Amino acid sequence: MNKPSIYELTFGELAGWLEERGHRKFRALQVWDWLYVKRATAFAAMEDVNPDCLGVLEEHFAIETLTEHVKQESQDGTVKFLFRLRDGNLIETVLMRQKYGLSVCVTTQVGCNIGCSFCASGLLAKSRDLTSGEIVEQIMKVQLHLDRTEPGSRVSHIVVMGIGEPFDNFENMARFLETVKHQKGLAIAGRHITVSTSGLAGKIVEFADRRFGVNLAISLHAPNNELRTRIMKINKAIPIEKLMEALDYYLEKSKRRVTLEYIMLRGVNDGQEHALELAELIGSRRPLVNVNLIPYNPVDEHSQYQRPDRETVSAFFDTLKKQKVSVSKRLEHGVDIDAACGQLRSKQIKASARA
Image (cartoon, rainbow, N blue to C red; front, top):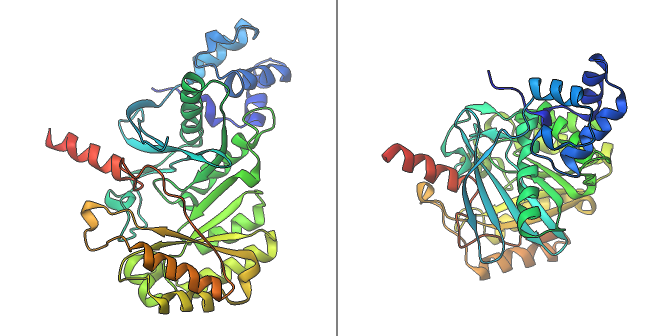
């Protein structure tokens, strides 16, 4: 049997596991430092750790469970990794260069069942959730890439909005957040981490109650039920009214700003009437809501959708501004490679099927 990833253990679990086997707590601090600060990829490299401790760790755990299958590098410095899991499944992870630092977008599921009609991630149905260790290891693989190519650079920001619905893999996502935020490890501040959801209202409430101290983004993409149901089938089960109730609960509980993501589809949801309706939907929430406009990245399998022109995007932006809505336009990354989330994975799987 494959040994579980050492990255699946939170610090508290690692300390407890070692203490149960007769090792003092400071051994956990040593191992944690080797994993996340020195970034060892083999237990044998942990030079100052007791050999008996290393032996029992190596007997029960693995450090590397992901292998790099494909790597695409864009002219703008974006790097898209396609990793192969031990069961043969493929997942995507993306390194993006921002003005404020180096950001990594991680995947939480193999495939996606949310079924947004414009999205490459949902072209292949979900086959399983990722473990917390598999999500953590995506960050570690990217950091190791930086260590090799840009010594001294570090991952400073994380967005949990790759393939899959993070709130559909809630507990593993929670464990991942605990690990990457740990002050003795990667120490990535909560304000530098954003988790995105397509709108699982009940989980938004739980997210608020558990006070993770990270940012929330909600994939809205339409200002009314008729249109949102047409492009996002989840709206049938969780209509906008329920989503807004959950958003209100989160805003009241957390007092944190929320981003509403809005992918712009030509002739579908990018009209002036949609901008005005969106402003009305946001209403009195304006001070705590920012709309992030995302021009659509075309996907071959969803040829019914096209990217709006710059003038349309600018007009939509200006209308929201005039309505006193906080709005931004997402800086695009990797437009000269498979930019859409899930696109590289889908192409590779289809190519393998044809071979």
